[in-house]
Image (cartoon, rainbow, N blue to C red; front, side):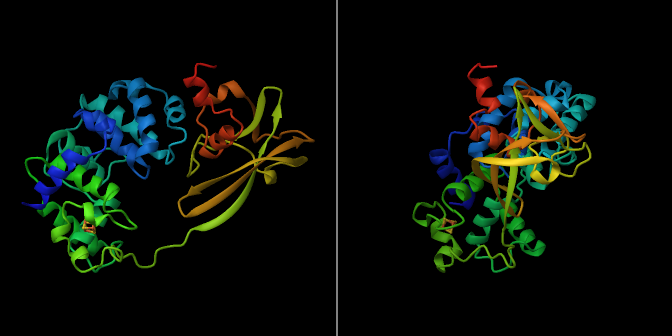
Length: 337
Ligand code: SF4
């Protein structure tokens, strides 16, 4: 049996029950693939379901306000994805439909080679495959790839192998099965080779190299940092600041102030600690009660707590609200407004 057939059989029997696997609607598949970029499956599921409920098609999404879209995306991270979704939906309205060639899908903002291939193969049955972390790992191990998987030449070799072994009748299942194998069996640490459907001809396994491959030279170490953020309230209002619209990260999002931003502020009692990673930085955030002695200045604004559920708020603010048991999304779900 070919690689594709073994993967296909295994996938049908073992795949996880994920909401985007129940549809062939290109819009829904595109939405899931954008959400899954850099984000774990478990985190994406509730966002995907809420999004599809509120924006069931590209025209509804195109007509939504950016602020509402960002508020719905709040907590999922990498916010340029939400802005690109919005722009892409507006392009679809102008074009009168969802793009239906690989090149036109690839031309949408926020869509790279991998996402274009995923949408093209799953929604339209086109024989295309792209590389994500899972597929790179599976292909590198299956061929016992000796090169650095961060190098272009190595990635091209792996892409060629993945593309040459594609199931032309079921390219969508082929792509999903490779991804699923990487996510559940061919894990980065301690792959479960015993349960793997391609273990009898996996070169890394046959050579005892499954824990050495993929090779990544010069992997950067994470940088750890500590930060204090302040919870300053006045009645039912909290003191926040909003990032500029042209900020490189989180443009337009609301944040808690840090002590350096204010004069005449006293950092008081510790309210909790949480961690948050941004790219290569691992932050340890300490949330402290703040007491304002002077004026809030021009940068900061008093915002009513009940307004927070309508505003785009950063993950740091969301995690702080959760610590204080004030998560606006949970309140909305439970019907408390
Ligand atoms: S046999 Fe092991 S290393 Fe090879 S693809 Fe399967 S899980 Fe990965």
